[in-house]
Length: 427
Ligand code: SDX
Image: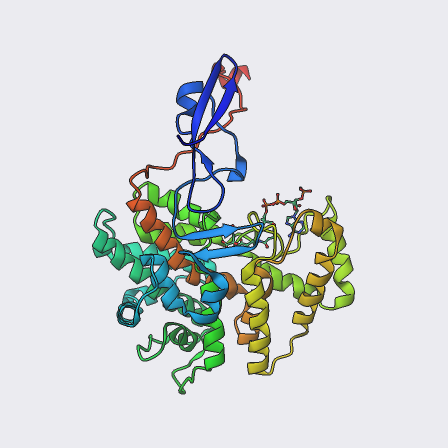
C-alpha cells in the first residue's frame, strides 16, 4: 500500500496518493483535489509543484548534483561531446560508435537553412538583439518545414527535432554575421557540430578559417553544460506551448522568448555586464552591499538559483574552462579576477550563506564567451542554441506521455465580484 497524504478542509477529510520517482522528492497526486474539495492549491512560481513526470534530467539542489539520464554532468563535460549528450537526451542511452556516427551524419545534413530564410534576416535592423532574431527565425521555420509539423507522427517529430538541433547554430551564426555586416557562411559538413558553428560565426569568405581545437572543445563543453535542466522556465514554456498541439518550431520559439529574460538565460549577458561595471576588485563591496539592500532592485547576476542551494556543478566546470581558454588564447581579462574575488566575498558573506546563494551556470560563462570573441548580446543566443536539444527532448517526452493534456492552471481571483454595467452618462 503506497503512502497517502491526508488533508483536512472544513467539513471534509480527503486523502491523496504519494507517488515516488527513482530518486528525489516524492509527489502528492492532487489531481482530484478540486473535484473533491472545490479548492485549488496556490503556488506562484511553482516552488512546490511538479508539472510532469520526466526521465531526462535530475537535479539535487542541496547536494549540487545534475544528472542527464543518470550520468553526472561533470563526467559528461569531461568525457563526452555535445552530439553524444544530444543523442543521450533524445534516446535515453549513450550511443555506440555506429549510432553516434549515424546521428552526427543526420544532424550534419540538416544544418543548411532554406535559402529564402536568409532574406528573412534583411527585415531586421543591423542592431537587432540576436535573441529577437532567434525568436523570429525559429518561429519562421514553421513556414518552411511543413513536412515535419504533424506532431502525431513520431517520424515527423524526430525530423523536426533533428532540424532544430542542426539549424540553431546556423541561425545563431547568421544573426551574429548580420549584426556585424559580414556575409553569411554556409555550413561545412567536414567540420564537427561545434567547429562548424565557430567557422560560420568567425570565418569570412576571403580566407580559410582554421578551427582552434582548444576553443572547439571548450565551446562544445559549454554547449553540454547548457543542454537541459529539468523543468526550468523556458522548458516549461516549451511544454506548455506543446501541450496545445502547437508545432515544434513554434514551441521552440516560445522557449527562446522565455529564456531571454535576465532572471533566466539572459543572466549570462547581465552577469558579464555587471562584472565589467564593477571593473575593479576594490569596487566589489559596494555591489555586494547593493545586492543585500532590500530597497535596491540590484541582484548579483549569475548568483542564486531556484533549485541549487549549493554550488551549481556547471559553474564549477565553467570556472575551470575559463583557465583553459585564457591559456589557449593568451588572454588575461581582469574581469575574471573580479569574478573570482566577487565569488569569494559573496560566499563568505552571511547574507549569501543564509539565503544559500551560489554562482550558477551564468556567472562565468560570459567571461569565456567574451574571451572567445562573442559580443555579450550573443551570450543568450548561445544558451538557446545549446538548450534546443533539451527543449526538443522534453517536448518529445511530453507528447509521448499518456497522461499529457493541455496545460491550464487556475487562479486565486481577487478582482471585483459581479456588478452591472453603468452607462457612460451616469459615471
Ligand atoms: C538560469 O531554473 C533553471 O534551471 C534555470 C537555469 C537553467 O539551466 O535553465 O539554471 C538557468 O536561469 C540560472 C539563473 C540565472 N539568473 C540569475 O543569475 C539572476 C540572478 N538570480 C536571481 O534573480 C534568483 O536567484 C533566481 C531568479 C535565479 C532564483 O530566484 P528564486 O528562486 O525565485 O528566489 P528568490 O528570488 O525568491 O530569492 C530568494 C531570496 C530573496 O531574498 P528575500 O526576499 O527572501 O529576502 O534570495 C535573494 C532574493 O532577494 N536573492 C538574491 C539573489 N538571488 C536571490 N539576492 C541578491 N542577488 C541574487 N542574485
